[in-house]
Length: 287
Image 1 (cartoon, rainbow, N blue to C red):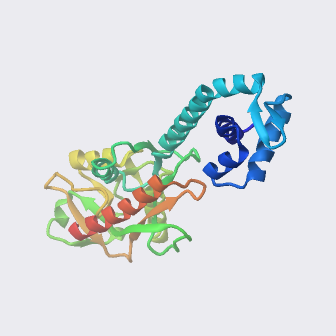
Image 2 (image 1 turned 180 degrees about the horizontal axis):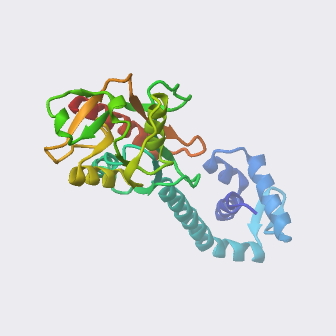
Image 3 (image 1 turned 120 degrees about the vertical axis):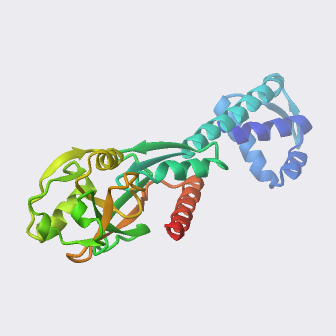
């Protein structure tokens, strides 16, 4: 039994005439006749008395006609509520953040000024539940199909060492015995810097590590030392004694990549992706 069948029945019962009901519904009469016969078959009773082409409601039909309007109204309302729930679910965006974490809060805050109904879930581990993933890779690596490059940046070295106060660049070969500050092993940026050092034949020695880029920045500010530092996405260093230097041992750059989960699709998600791309584009002009 379908909702459309019940609506057809109500209109036929109203006029007690198939032709008038078919004209109002803008369908051919055989279609509405078949719908009524299927309804009667499914219910196991005749709903109309038929004398030639003339129809009249019988007792069963009259009872159904009196009862159906409230039921149809509730079913229509239920459908609307279910659609609202489904739509709200589409308005929640899960973002896996593997890079550029300092930029995302301001980006979301800016977006929500005109999109207050959109909710966000920020993830730091891959539970295969993300809609978007912000990650990074070295600039020399090929970008996968469908990935969006949000920006590219140089990797610098931050230090408070006085002997580099007037310098603009640094040779990492001179730092073989120096301790570093950085992210914990396994983080994408840490793997990137360790691989770079490995190519130079340098075994890194970390004195302070953290899972959180913001904490690494705080440690650099508070304690000084040596740390790899992305030029754009980690923000400013507030300690005036800390200087960022270009690395002269060969190009060391990375791309910030936006991945879109191909299994997830909605108008809200597409609009946010477009907003994010434009946000990073505008940000690059200011940096």
